[in-house]
Image 1 (cartoon, rainbow, N blue to C red):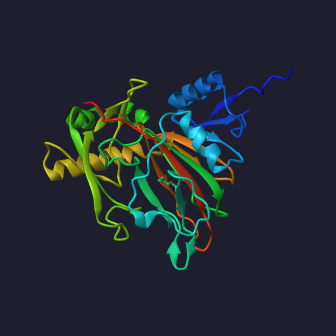
Image 2 (image 1 turned 120 degrees about the vertical axis):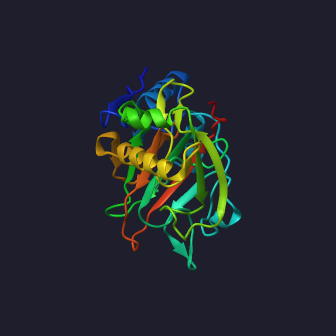
Length: 285
Ligand code: SIN
């Protein structure tokens, strides 16, 4: 009888990220393996599975280990036309252009820190990103721990914001605040500015530089000042793991307690990622 290899989980930084090896995600996992991965994900916020060789079916199956597959809510013009075979609810993130059109969303360059879909009523719990083509340099994805940022936030700032809600707004396709490439606002939402995680019970900063436009109950000048302080604190290098992509890397991040950003990359090099999500729920106060 052959025993399956032991799953190794190695933290990548003090606050966020772990590399997972000893696992081939082409194979169906058993309940004990799934429980190990889910525990590691809650503990480390971001899991990195280097060098996997996944089909789209594999990606959808792995997504299901972490919850209910999220439905794509993008408008039709963001659906790629040039990709030969794309299964439902997989989104392309890519700068590749065919007939002058990009085949994926979020095509070019640097992107500010954000929580995915925070502008929606029920932002999703997790995002998975699988790399198919990567540039020779740049296009790294940076992840910041909202838990660590909250725990170490200046009490004077924290106390002004504690218990308040923040407003979020997003123009689809924007990678920078006020970016004119985004299309007209798709949605606005409000959520607690500090979010309690429904599984770990930990509190995390839940505002971000790309999409948060104000804190309710404060005048705009004070709200702007506090938000700037929170963003500058949350994005400090000690709270961040920066992932340099190799082909075949699969990452999953917990969108409830982290933000992510992307570094710039050469526009004449191809970058292609497959992305799925795990549905979230309405966020309690
Ligand atoms: C995203 O924000 O979902 C995409 C991040 C990336 O392209 O690295």
